Each structure stands twice: as C-alpha cells, then as structure tokens.
Image 1 (cartoon, helix red, strand yellow):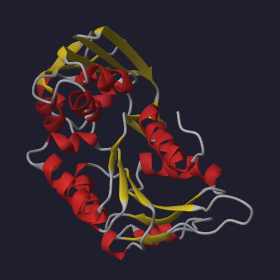
Image 2: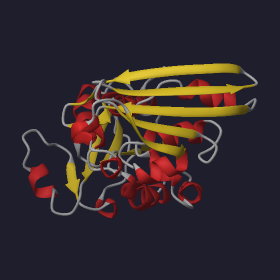
Image 3: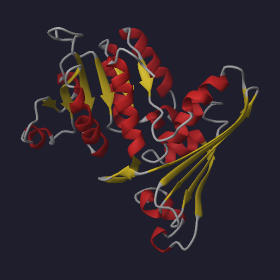
Image 4: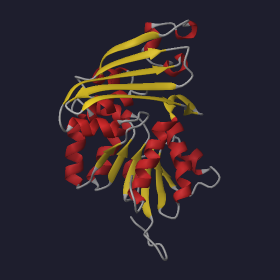
Length: 275
C-alpha cells in the first residue's frame, strides 16, 4: 500500500479497473498527482494486456484479472457494469476501498446488497461518484428530511444513443426533432441503458429511490452536449439543477464530467483538505 515519501505525506497506491475512454482519461489526468498517488496496477479485459504494456511510459503493472492485481490502498472502477458485479466485490473482500463510476449496476437485482456484504466482509468502503450530473450532494442532503418527488431528464444528440435500445424506438440517423426514447423508473432506465443511464441510477440512489424516481430520456438533434436535469421537491423546498456537459473525445456516450468525477473522488482521498 502506501509508500513513504521523503519530507511529506506517504504516496497512496491505487488499482485502475478498465482502460477504455474513461479509464485512459482518468489515468492521464492523475499523472499530475504523482507526488501523492501511484496507479500501481491496471486491470484490463483478457487479450488486452500486451498492447497496454507496450505503450510508451506505461509504468503500472498490467493484468487481466483483479485476482492478479497487487494489494493497494484503493481501487477505481471505470470498466462498466460487469466490473461492478464481478471485480469490485473481490476487491472489497480483500479490504480495498473502491470508487465506482458505473453506478447503474446498482439498479440490478441484489447488487447493492452483494456489494454491501463484500464491503463489510473486507472492512472496506464503496464510494459512488456523482458522475455527469451536478447537485447530487444537495439531493442526498434533502433526503435526510424526506423527499416527495424526484424526476430526471437526460437529453443527448442522436449519436449518443447509438448501440442502445433507442435504435429500435426511432431512426436516430434521420431525426428532425427531439424524440423521447424512454419513460419509466430509474431502475428500468439503468437496466435498459447501462452505458448511458448511470446518472439516472445515481439520482435514484441519492434521492427517493430507484423505483420512485421518474426518468425521461430524449434523443435531440438540436443539442450538441449531453444535458441532465433534476427536479426534486420535499420538506427542504424545491430543487432544479441542469447540467450541459461535453463528452470525452474518444466516446460520445460518456460525459467528460463523469470522468472528472472519478478524478475528484481520487484527489479527495489523498488531499489534506477536501471539498
């Protein structure tokens, strides 16, 4: 785990699970934190390790299973729902805290309970990051006194919905105006749109619950950014928050703010002052 650093705080170590567009972005961003953090190991899909090891400047150990990863202070998940249900529980049982990006996986049956048991067994903590949407801190605070209603609307350009069930609902290539591609609960949205609806799951988990949070997803050729709107009411008053974020250069389905949310969560673990 933590390595000694001459004249200062120890260097914390981390395992990065996943090296797609988000994993690469997070890894590159955290290079600036080398004085406080070392990405000790990167876990990738079978067959991908050799190519990653060959990249110039790759200092981290690269493995194809979390069981082959060394012990570290904590882990970062940037690999999708499968990693949350398979890799993350094994890391938690080993006593490693885990920061999870693919929050939508917690909408699957029994997954929250499984992760909680794994964390308890290992004496570890699981952190869910807000991802691409603002206001999760306020929503979670409002929940303490009780919420009456929470709704979330996600709006993306048609290209952001390629490879999802939206293709069976509308012709994404020829849309002339906004088209609603989904209406239902946050749990249903997370299950049907796992690569696009992590925000819906996060809103549900932070607020009134996955089944009571109402979600609308829209394909809109008139927007160039992914937009997220939360409307909530309760004993605290009323909340309206809208975020219009740019996507990662390598993946139009992933908001840059989602990757930055992981970066912030990591820096909060190693910083002397946390906001």
